[in-house]
Length: 291
Image (cartoon, rainbow, N blue to C red; front, side):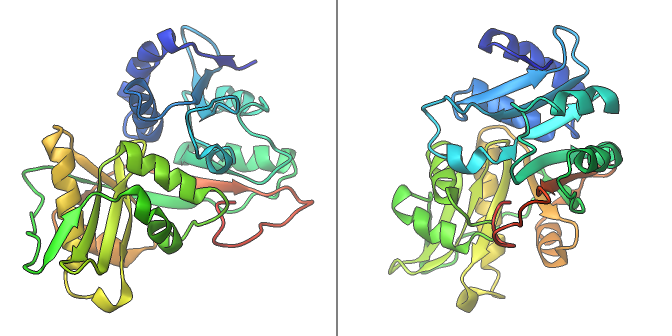
């Protein structure tokens, strides 16, 4: 049976996850944010303690600090196992995945995909194909810093423009606006505008230490403004002494090329994916919905 760790045990779990980076990047980053008070109401489970072989995380359904519980409650926040059997056994605990409802499994390691597909078949959730992502990394030394053009200004994303950001996100669905609101409160972000306030584009940091949600308004595209936003948000991470990461779907060549052009490098031998579980008794509500 899965063991829910206490707050006092979490620093030790952080140390356990570190040697398995970058595969454990999301779990490690979410846990680090949790310990810093930036990502509350998250439960971390292991198969056994103090010598775990598998770990996974979910939002605490009884928590009262995270507004985006409705959105994140559909998502398993991440998983890792030293061996497939330990991770399969862990994920059978209904506190980690409710196999009777549509859900998203985050950061599924490539080595675990076959076992995950088999488990989904066993649970009769009609496994969908993995959605692989690449990890790209930039350091202060190799990132090209692009200045803000004359006549424009940058500021953090504020709560009063959350609806604007949410409306442009491809994963918009019930509760996603609250998820973005939580990010805005705790993570770095950039909102690029003309001096008259006209919205040009934006990008946000997420709970596990990567940048994402890059968006440029259609009439401002192909003018280099995405490079401005990426480099300006990266600078915020550098100020905190952090390297910068992005996760990009492996078939999104435009975004990959954009980030390469400003100095990001693809992290080799990195293979993870998001996977969706859809019980055979129901259908996903929308291709744009998180499930």
